[in-house]
Image (cartoon, rainbow, N blue to C red; front, side):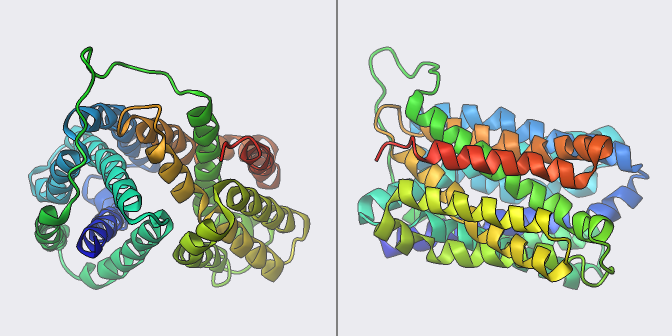
Length: 371
């Protein structure tokens, strides 16, 4: 079991590491392909479309072949995506590339989380928060990696990252858990979310929309609404990210102590209180403190949601997790643009008040979770 846990942790790390290495190169990619901001935004939409396409399909694949097969396939292909970059020459090539990246990242997200659930089930103790914390560490180190490789061409940077991560993924394969389940006589059919999955999915939607909103708009809020200087403005996002990572490392112990429903309730309350503090008091350090509290509140909600979906016994293996992951990603990917439209219409403080409403909804939905 320790080897299986380490292997899944490494795959979470690799996923965050690869993702951040290419995403932090976007300014260079924009220049290389002569993309306007609007064209880059539309091209990046292909990542979202790819992820949302693959997640339900991955749930179906897991139900038929098990999450071990799906994790091996998606991890090896995802780590190999950056090898494709040197052959891109047209803007439409880039759109296809982003779609492939999104598709494989979404597939890896569902399959490795299903593997993480299998590790949890066999160990008998919560572990999901620590896996997601490792993903956050992978993202942070990925950003540092780009800081070093910025002196080299994108092709060299991407080749080294892909090659290294591919070797790590190959090394993890022997220790993955075989959890294949035989489908019934009629096979695995399309099913709609039941009440439990719908509640968890709505919570995931609210949490991931809030996470995306903080990631994309907190610096803008500090700079343009609170009127801080350029040096201080990014600290809000740093505080939010640090709280997310710290909260996830400690989340498993709290989950074992309090249970899922109580922890989601408390964390939803924290997220709402932190955002309320941020919106009501236009002082830079109060806003930064509020963002830290929001990060602490949101830190364990998604790991719990994914774990709960994966443990659901009323749905085939992988199907419940695919449902919740898809609903959550809808919030994460499309929430920030919605906030942008609201901000243009009524101001950013009003737009973030919409997120506050979703946090309150999340608080209410947490009382409906079945233990």
